[in-house]
Structure formats: C-alpha cells, structure tokens
Image (cartoon, rainbow, N blue to C red; front, side, top):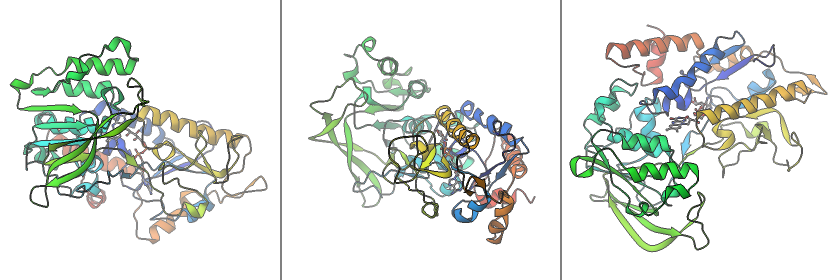
Length: 453
Ligand SMILES: Cc1cc2nc3c(=O)[nH]c(=O)nc-3n(C[C@H](O)[C@H](O)[C@H](O)COP(=O)(O)OP(=O)(O)OC[C@H]3O[C@@H](n4cnc5c(N)ncnc54)[C@H](O)[C@@H]3O)c2cc1C
C-alpha cells in the first residue's frame, strides 16, 4: 500500500480474528513475540486496507468468483495440517499432534474439544526436536501458576493444573548437532524452576569451540544443563538422540503406554558435525514408557479448493504453491530462466504456503515483503495482471464490494477491523477481570455473539 499510491488491499481471514499462528501458535508465555501484531495495527489504520474476517476463501467464496474483482491475489494461508508419522498405534488415545495441542492451549476453536489426557501417567514423549517440540515440553513442565497471567485459555490452565506429567523426553532421529531448535528455546527449558535436565554423557567429549556458532551455543547450553539438579526435583526432561519412531503401544488396547523407536546411527558417508548429516537404522530398538505422546515433526500446507480452476498447481510433496523465489506463482510449464517466465499473471504467494512450514516471524515477514515488492515491480513494469487484456486492465476494480453478496448469500457474516477490535476489547476485559492479559473466546459462535452484546 505504501509503494503503490492507490492500491487497495483486502485481507481475507477464515476466522473472525486475525493473526494466525501469532495468536494460535506462538506460546502464551512468549508475549513479546506477539509484538509483530503492532505492524498489522499500523496497516489496518489505512483507509485502503480492509479486513474481511470470518470468510474462508475457497469455501465461503469460490476463487473464480473473486477473480474478476481483483488485479492480484496473494495466497498466504499458512499450513493448516501436520505431518503424520505413519506408524502403527499413532491413532491411540493419548497420542496428539503438537499442532492440535498447541492450538488447544492457545484457544484455536477447532481444537477446544481435544481434552488431552495428562493425568493418566507421568511420562510424556515428544517426537521431533524443533522449537515447537520444545514449546510443548516447556508448557508441560512449567509450573501452572507461572502461566496463569498469560493468554492461555482457562480450560487449558485447568487441565494443566491436574497434569501428572513429570518427565518429558524430546526425541530426535539424529544427533545433538543436528537439532532444529534454537538456543533461546533450549535455554528457557534449562531455567524452569524445579525442573532438571538429564545430562547427555556423549556430549561432554565435544569441544564446542570447534563448532560453528549456532551448534557451539546449543552445545554449551546442553553441557551446562539445568539450574536444578535431578536428584532434587520431581520434574525433569531429557533429549534422546538417534531414535526413529517405529510403533506405539497400549496396555489396555486403547490408551498409549509406550513408544518403540528404531535406533539410528550416522550413515557411513555422513559428516557427524554437519547439520544435514544423514542417519541409517540399526537393528536395535528402544522402548520408552509414555502415557502421552506428541508428534512434532512439522506442519503441512494443503491446497484450498478452487486453486486448480485458476491454473495454480499445488506441490503436494513439498506442501507449497510453486513460485519463483519472489512469490510469483508459477505455472507447471515454467522452467528455470527469466523471472516471470511461467508466472500465472496476478497470482502471488507468501509465508509458509510459499516456502514450506519453516521460519520464524521475522523471516516470514522479510519473505512477505519480497512477495509484495514483486507485485509492485510487476505493476510498475506493466506485466499482465489477473484480468489484463492486451495490456489493458479489465478487472471490475470492485474488490470486496464485488464479492460481498456471494459471501452473504451463503449466510456467512463477514467481519471488519472494527468488529475485530470489539472482540479484542472484550477478550482483554474478560482477561483483566481474572488477572490475565486476555481470555480468548473459545468458539467462532462466541466470537460472533460478542459482537451482538
Ligand atoms: C507452534 C508454533 C510456535 C511458533 N512460535 C514462534 C515464535 O515463538 N517466534 C517466532 O518468530 N515464530 C514462531 N512461529 C512461527 C510463526 O508463527 C510463522 O513463521 C508464521 O506465523 C507463518 O505465517 P503465515 O502467514 O505463513 O501462516 P499463519 O500464521 O498460519 O497465517 C495463515 C492465516 O491464514 C488463515 N487461513 C487459512 N486458510 C484460509 C482460507 N481458506 N481463507 C482465509 N483464511 C485462511 C489462517 O486462519 C491463518 O490466520 C511458531 C510457529 C508455530 C507453529
């Protein structure tokens, strides 16, 4: 909007409330991370920005019906699914995806009925060694009183206060130098009051000074360990390396009781110091007792309905919309070469659906700026857009005004930014009354009802 003076931007969001994973993914005890919402607030002040909440693109309005009214459509709808392990027992009670657990404690309407069974036993296994896995471990181990002032839902606080989980194992397929989590996240776990870290004997022989910067810092934190010692605490956690999940088992045929892993070793040609070192299975197995397990092996984007009608190919293997690195959506025929070769006019993407489900907010924002710059550059250089004919722009130019009747005709109630601010104020008010930053509405119905009271 800043770079094209008369550009109008309509932002569609399937939920009544904005912010995606910043609201429903980022951990409640990391409020400072959510400051990026201020950037949204700034953009929303512009009269040329329209927030259209509670409208699911592809469901509440077909993409082909939107197309005539816009010059460009940018897809940045994130990653709404997660990768499965594909092992026997994965469907047992007590096995959750990190995505649903995180969504549950953050108030994502879709997962408010999850009711994770945290009081069945005291051992939890988290499969995966990225930052989301450490978020799950930290939330399980943090004394619940430390979370009460955050915007974690009351329902989640109640369940966590009755949790019997005392030991969490965070398990990865590769070694300590191949972990995907960051130093800040692991350091935080080491600092939790009365939670001990089980030291890793194999790490003591590594000289961190010989390692690249990030691995060096992580190794130093792991070697230093936790501020609490395991003999003195009830709660503890540990990292388990070189273990690939093989099967999950139940003691009573329905509820998880253990997870079996195939032990792994570095491949013969692998460099153990490389972050991309590959591993191969050995003939040995390890079984860990667990009353709950969380798979945290990555989120996954899927195609929204109607993409193919616009000629958009979805790469189901990578879980992305194929694009040049600048966010221009590429047609299947596109080969390597000039920037706009194969670009489907007027279609762009950004965020996790562009790059795959990796990267923090800062990198996602930088990448979104790149996509926005590509639109500006194309606009300024006269490249074809969605409805261009012979260089003429033939879009109706109506934007949301052209789409609204379609949406409302389906009985959907679209929300604008003012509506969101009303919900926001009510959530903050509810939170304030019980000493929290916010108490989120747990369902779409409650969010909409809040507008009528
Ligand atoms: C558990 C977790 C914790 C994280 N913690 C941190 C952290 O502490 N620090 C950090 O920097 N980064 C963190 N990240 C990463 C950060 O959240 C992402 O980099 C960023 O949110 C990705 O942005 P996105 O726009 O691609 O996707 P999202 O944030 O998921 O936004 C996509 C939006 O599209 C909407 N949508 C989906 N489908 C449709 C549709 N059909 N129609 C309309 N709207 C639709 C969704 O509702 C959502 O609001 C975390 C990620 C996760 C999963």
